[in-house]
Length: 157
Image 1 (spheres, one colour):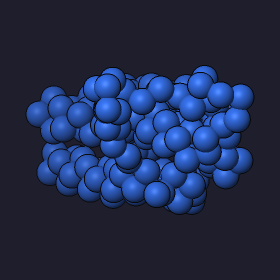
Image 2 (tube, rainbow, N blue to C red):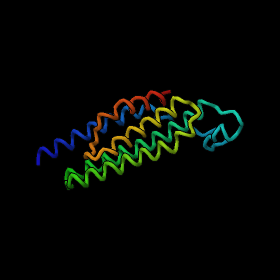
Image 3 (cartoon, rainbow, N blue to C red):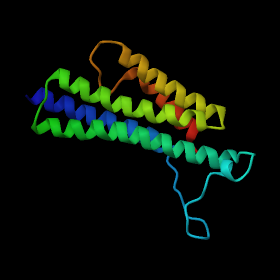
């Protein structure tokens, strides 16, 4: 049983590292002078404000990534006290990766910046490709390191 706990703690460490990579894309939303949240520049005029679009799309993409990896971390913590079968662990990890893919695919077409759009599509594609493989999923999928770094780079301010 100590090996399972060490593996779970190792997985938590990897999740923290992935979260730190994704955090580089995090931006804050400040209310405008009227006190309301800023609206999309694309809706206000036919020309797109690239910086505002990038900020909005990256924030939404980051929320999807955080939801997925945060869910994995929560599951890993819960499994310290109440272990689950490898099949159930695999199912949970796949569900969280699906959350990430769904969020990224929803935001990619909204990105006016082709680098952001490509980074979102590549990360979603890499996750889908890994999930198509019938091998059990791991929290710390090495094949996702470069797409996650590209996501972070594309959204960095």
